[in-house]
Image (cartoon, rainbow, N blue to C red):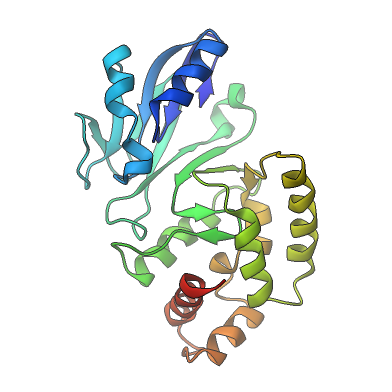
Length: 245
């Protein structure tokens, strides 16, 4: 949730109850809702929230939504709470998935750039390819990786520790992964979230942003990928993650 002390905007409310509880605890009114994709754990709370607060909802133009939304697509701008959020098409996890980016360069009130990326980019990981292709997801992740390094990555799930275990298997000699895993183990021991992450950190630890790195290419080659094809490298690593335990 983004808020200015009086009103809040929520992202991907899969369940209305915790949203309502947070708004009441902070004495906020709901000003709007942003949706990244159509999966139930991202839209399940929409109807109940709109019944209580009939606010604008912005969602991807290319996906079915359970409530009426203002459809957004790549290059659009959502204006709410005095902020401008840029819409970025990031297909792969689903066919019409979008992300929302707040550029701090011309919006100093936000402090630092912020990215709401749903299930496209996780800390040290990325979403499964339910509807898109490896090529689409690699392109989507490359667009997000090109954002400013200090961008706060507000993804939708706390999968960081399991993702880091896999990242270590892909790049066992990557010291940044080992350091961050130790840091995150300490955070989770006190039930502290590991999120948000930062784009600069993800470039160092996330194997799905590192298909061009020699160690990732070698791991993919060992699993049968064409080492000269970045999409094949990405696809091999993503396929391994699907079965990794």
